[in-house]
Amino acid sequence: MGKVRLIADTMLGRLALWMRIAGFDVEYYNRIDDAELVERTLEEDRILLTRDTLLVRRRRLRGRVIFIEGDHLEDQLRQVVRLFGLEKGGFLKRCLRCNTLLERVEKEGVEGRVPPYVHRTQRAFSQCPSCGRIYWAGTHREEMVKRLRAILGEDAM
Image 1 (tube, rainbow, N blue to C red):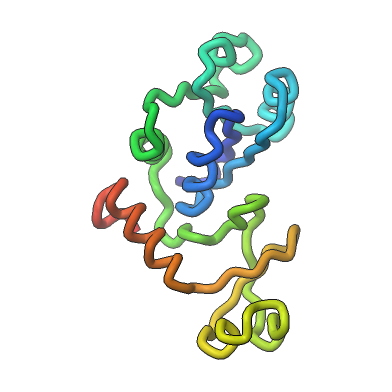
Image 2 (tube, one colour):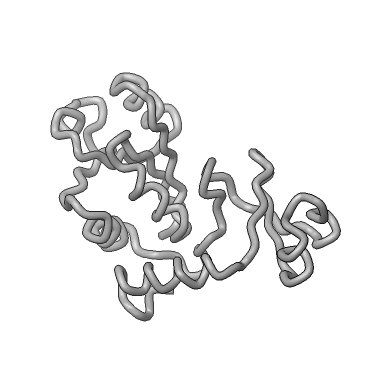
């Protein structure tokens, strides 16, 4: 995947989430008009992912926009991975809420901030330095891996 920086339009929220799960740097704003989306794409040196044919035609975005063809998340995610590849070891390295790279935190540092059972049973924790959200490898992680493997192929992860 390299250092590709993406931004998804308002129609692609689910895709943006699953791309973050897979390790992509993808910004997403659920309430943004087209003019501001174009400005952010250019200012932040990103590539715009869109389902909007009018955005694809904008001259200012020439070479910086990709039309997402599929109607379904699975097809959309496959298209992006075909274009940019999938970085091994990128899985769940970004905050799902704000896209920031996660940082490891000591178990003692999350006591009282996660449920007691989670604190007792988990060894490794990560935290988003931007929004403070805490992550750990619970059963939801296994389900995400299964879903990505089903979409992208068994050796994707």
